[in-house]
Length: 151
Image 1 (tube, rainbow, N blue to C red):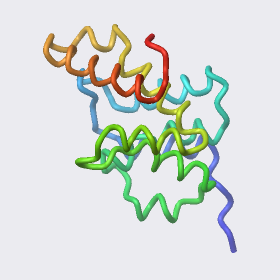
Image 2 (image 1 turned 30 degrees about the vertical axis):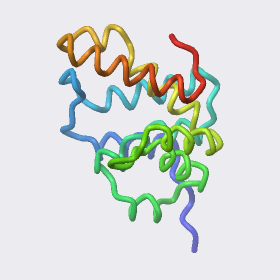
Image 3 (image 1 turned 180 degrees about the vertical axis):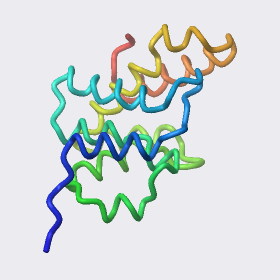
């Protein structure tokens, strides 16, 4: 018997639960970032699968969910592929990371929405100067490697 795929609402609920208690660099609940990225994907015309991947885009990297969980999850393979594509591996060169995103159908839009929210001037404004500058340079570099225009 095959489990029916998780709905987008179920994926959102699962992601919110998995990241419960986590905060972003500005001290905000991490689920706010996930919601912003999923909405960014939706506003950019992303599919339901891309929106699901947006909700889960940091789950493996942040160890909120395991690779074993993702492998067994009732999700389309395209969602799993996108989540894995945008998951940065420890010590991985950024060029390799960018190449994987570009090689995975649908992943670029998820990463674009993620970068747009990460680089939001309002979000960055609450960080100290050196952190803001370091992150801005990091986001600009990955945007360049992905062929995305500077916001």
